Structures are given as structure tokens and as C-alpha cells.
Image (cartoon, rainbow, N blue to C red):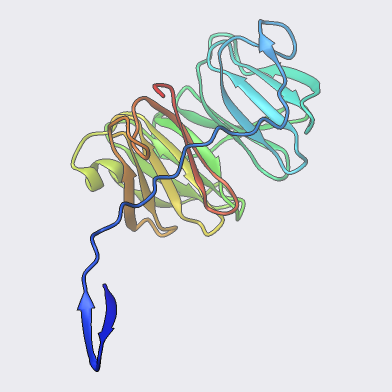
Length: 244
């Protein structure tokens, strides 16, 4: 609406609703790349997990075969180690001290990233059910539990479970979720990507559901076949989608 003055009389004239410009999607700028298809050092066969520690070391994990390769911050190959040839690696994260957390066989196993020395498993409940893990800004962990229900478990910096969000995605959406990927921002908020729900669900650090976004479709902001989620230090959320 705008005001139009005619003589001493002010009238309000309604303008038609103007279209809102839709931002044009941009391709990401490649800073550098390393690796290629293959099985030798610095080559990848079925790499699905990546993590970076406080020193900038980059860890790349193969989904099958249990191989984890270590690169420096510039992508130069340093070393490689294995968690077991018959192991399926479901998720991986690294903290500032160079400790690598690997999700395999339903458990979260800790390793020294530089030496591959196996430390311990994070204790939680009976049996095995973890499917993904991420390190939080305060040195703790957030993990996805996927046995019988889609829980999200928060650990403190000592590895003690301090909060469980029971049926995190399914309670918020009303639909079951069988594959949850997790991320966290610098404020402690938790982001859960439901690959079956095709949406992102945001929770506070205390486990309170805040909001959701996404949904199935091909339009900007919608998802098809989502695979992973990450959050940067400005709380921008990145979701990979293999169908786009």
C-alpha cells in the first residue's frame, strides 16, 4: 500500500502483490581436491565418512573393509589403518585432540587418530545400536541410536550419556525413521536428518524439539535421496542429496 495525496485528502492505494525473486542456486567453489578411485594409499573405493580434527588432519573412512586413511590439512596422504576387514563403517567423527570416534558393529569405538591405537567403547545400554556420531563444540558427542526406535543420545566430554531424546524424529513427524544422520552447531543445538522422512529436525541442547524443514520433492529446500548432514560455525546447514 502507498499513500496518495489529492488536494487536502490522503487516500491509500493498494498495489498488487509483487513476485518475490527466487535466489538462483549456486555451485560450490572447489578449493582443492585429493584422491581418486582405487584401492591404494590416497585412493578411495567406497568412502562414505569424513572427519577433521583440531590440527586439520583429515580422516576418510571406507564403508566396507574398515580402512581409514589420514591426510594433512592440504590433502597429502599421511598414513592408513584398519578397524577390521569385515567391518561396516557407519559413521565417524574426530575431536580437537585427535581422537577419532568410529561407529561400527552398532557401537562407538574410540581410536587415537595418529597411531590407530584402539582405546575404548562408549558405554551405553545393552547390546549395539548406534548408527552415526558427531563431536559437539564443548567436546561432547551426539549419536543416533537405531534399534527398535530412533533415539538421539548426547554424551559429555568424558563419554558419559547425559541426555536421550527418545523417538526423536518419529515423535516429531508421526512417521517411523530407520536411518538418522546427526549434526550439531556451536550453540549446542542438534540437527537430525531423517533419510526416510526426508527432512531435518532441530532440537535444543536439552532435547526440546524446535522445528523442522525440508520434505520430499524436487523444489529448492526439498529432498530426494538424502545421505548426510553438516553444520558450519555460522549455523548454516548442509544436506547432501544424491538425487539432485
